[in-house]
Image 1: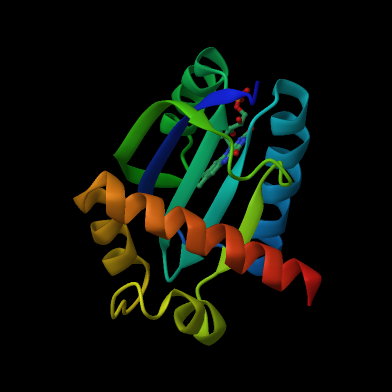
Image 2 (image 1 turned 90 degrees about the horizontal axis):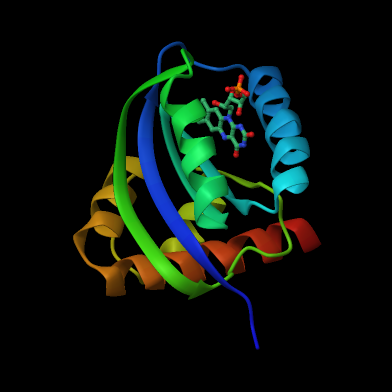
Length: 148
Ligand SMILES: Cc1cc2nc3c(=O)[nH]c(=O)nc-3n(C[C@H](O)[C@H](O)[C@H](O)COP(=O)(O)O)c2cc1C
């Protein structure tokens, strides 16, 4: 039987604008830790805003959310969705990354006329159906960009 996991999506605001090096350091560290505890997901970043999807065993998610909530690199963490007993969507990535650029906007186009990550976050928080559509678009975006 396929594995069932808990999936949480949240948004937050960076305290200081991260450099590209800061983002890579954050991702390198997150990937190593996530791999060790079976967590997967995707991080999106746009102009001081983060949106992250985390999937895995409920206890592992709880532990990581507690650490992330105390992280001084960001504030205003808001949980947009928290689902249980779902199939894993980001199983190929211990933490994928999607920069919010013209290509991402184009790929998300058709799901809504998003201008930036804030609008995407509002849409994701609006309904579970909207969130499911966005997760699918994120998976396709990561897959297309990592194959490029
Ligand atoms: C936006 C953002 C996303 C993060 N994502 C992860 C992640 O996916 N996995 C992870 O282990 N740490 C992530 N971190 C780092 C954690 O907040 C924390 O520094 C790390 O888990 C170590 O926590 P500890 O010192 O409590 O063990 C993230 C931090 C930020 C600011």
